[in-house]
Image 1: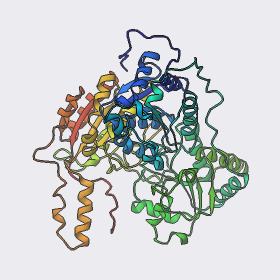
Image 2 (image 1 turned 180 degrees about the vertical axis):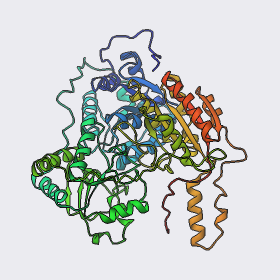
Image 3 (image 1 turned 90 degrees about the horizontal axis):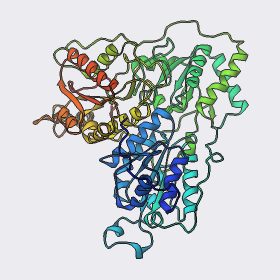
Image 4 (image 1 turned 180 degrees about the horizontal axis):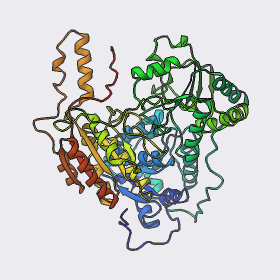
Length: 591
């Protein structure tokens, strides 16, 4: 990453102004980066980052849109399980960035979002502009999709707000927090010198563990089951947690399923990984669920949604079900991201990774270390193979096949994929192999998420690759300037079907339900006449690019060129034209 934008002269690091206290809190909290799009409401804070801290620890990352400010911090959290900071200008910047905050909320990603308002004191406001950028309760705009918020009224209040915010956002279940800084307080000179405290006594709590009763009960279910099924949903990035999941599956002989919406959590090449990571249950996946007499969910998102694909009255589902999650502590009434209530025989309020460890310990004793798995292969993933017409017109799945073929045994991180990703040939082998989806299905996130992941992994010698939909890319394209400016290497592949294709399917579903012509589904959806030059859009942001690439062999060669650029420390973009369609069509209402 380029070491740029360092001030020529940096005065004393002593805190002299209210905003100096806020900036120094980020430093003592060990926040390495703060993404921002400038705004006058936090001009004092901006000055403190530059002229009090020297734009170092944290370093500012200039973005061209508040969407990217948040999505970069979101991507960083995906790769590290730690909060980064981002700053949003009063009212208008917060409104812009709120979609990204919602994505991070639904994805349960830690993040310290810093906002600004005011000045709160009316006599300090400039005519017009300061009035429309002052709010009585700015946190009300997003309080239903953040974990906590505060608007401190004193320098000491700033210290407490940052200590509490960091503690809460990094405690499970993680989610964004919001701290709003009054412009007047930022620009207030301190009455006396102020010492920013150590964070040693304000660390996040260890995730709660389950009771012995619950651990024994779930261990008993798994030990006695004839066809156990484990659903691994959310989980941490540590190698220890990854290995414990594998040990649990092998000890119990349970089939395993994972979600393409979540980060890599289990080796998808393993013989017990029954079906490729999925959005919706395939016929093969439904058969695996149907056979299960015991289902144990480890923080699976929308457990009842899985059962609903099997039968409508899920309260009568025959399998015994255990559900391990802390998520209910975040549930409230505004957003329905808590999903339908699942029927659960053993509800467990505990961190998923800790519970895997606890139940594994009990089972190793109970089974005397003898595995219940007979070594049979339940993995149904096919070998990578292109669609028949891939040298004429690529299908969306051909991008996945090309990546799998080029990758071989190399180590990559797949930062993002499209909604129509097949997930059946590109395998996940370690905790950093895949970073999941955007959480809240808000477009424009993919480019920023990729940059955040690449920022977090820039020293790990593993190329970061993303496959983006053309709609997502076009709405988030100006995020690429930040990657170019700071030298953040990532390979962006745009799966370009020149359509808002997800909505084509919805229009077809409505037309069929109403007995109207489904062949009109494309009207108001296709992005053509003219076809947008996505490679030129990337070049305009300072990123090397190529395309449109239209055949599988061309794509493989382009990926090799892109990876060479990334390994040399530069971002790169490929515009890959594919036929309109999905490898795995989404469900539509009424179908």
